[in-house]
Length: 494
Image 1: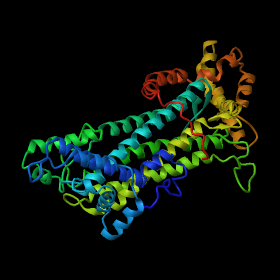
Image 2: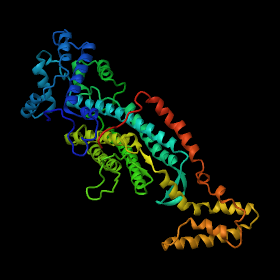
Image 3: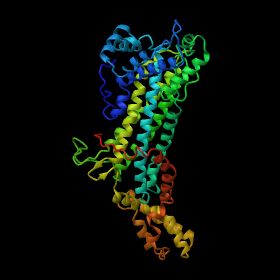
Image 4: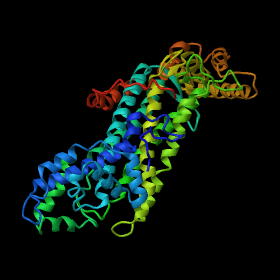
């Protein structure tokens, strides 16, 4: 058991996760949540009229008041000493609570099994974590949508197979990243909103202990389950459980986090490729060093780190799947130790990924704030490949001016192949194609206005309109839902 509540100490994650997320998965928050669960159970049992052997209320207001007064004063060292002696973490916390609140010892954990506190606490913390991730992701979507709108009209070279293809725009490409993140937000929201509570189900999920406490009153036991859930902020409970809730829930949540990691990795990879082409740069600060040996380097280290953490997240769902598939009957304990690792790590790493994403989009640097588009480089790369892409438009213009289509097609074929050969030999550039067509002895292109036909904006299709439509239809509702948290930045050292 940890004896401190330091920020989650993980060399890969803890440095980048928020203090809020780290505190959520630290020992103090967990054990304070356990005490609140014990209070909710005792309150619900009292409200449902639980009686003692003498026919009097078993849980008195004074006992509840004593329990309420000690929800937060967790003594981790004392609890660790109890656990060393008892070899049981939940009972260690029960004893630690009795040390400071001896008068309520007989009402704590009444009718419950250890999974009442461990499983329900995990569900509470995961729902809180999902809500925080939704807010951070909404902020990233908002910032990325602003970037897309800003650059919706800027032509850039599109790629398929990482080979030059038709033009798109810088902003339209950003909507591809945006759409993935929008899908991720929808899934995270669904998992958050549909997450049920384990409730008060007893040792093997039969509620036998609670049925005994209430002298066989099934209706009170049913109400107890719902009442405890309501007190802890849930309006849904698992309809059935064993000792634990179905571990498929963990798998589904980690799969959703993995989906976000996939999107972040794809975006980060694209940024790294664009940095290689010198078209887009992540924030780079005035005194930042790219390499200890190569002083000229400007490595995209934020995108690289985001990809690295995303890859770590993607490895975790397999463990959750193994746990779900190897549960024995009502429960086996070999799920416990690994879950205490991969559930917090998944949330901490995803939080770190989103903080880095926000940093990339909003960090102030020597070139401004957020992602920097190197417009002259983008335009240069467009000019380099535009001659090939423009040939169809040039042919149609020549035909409209009275030329034979097959004649102009053959002229374009011959000259484009000749230029390609010169480019591959290192002696020419695609820009020569326009000069060759203009100078062709047939004068087939003499009446064509090359400037009007080869404007890059003629080759981006509906890219600007698609950006506006996507932001208006899919991002605007997100901005409305999360208006109170938008504008969050990540001015952190990443």
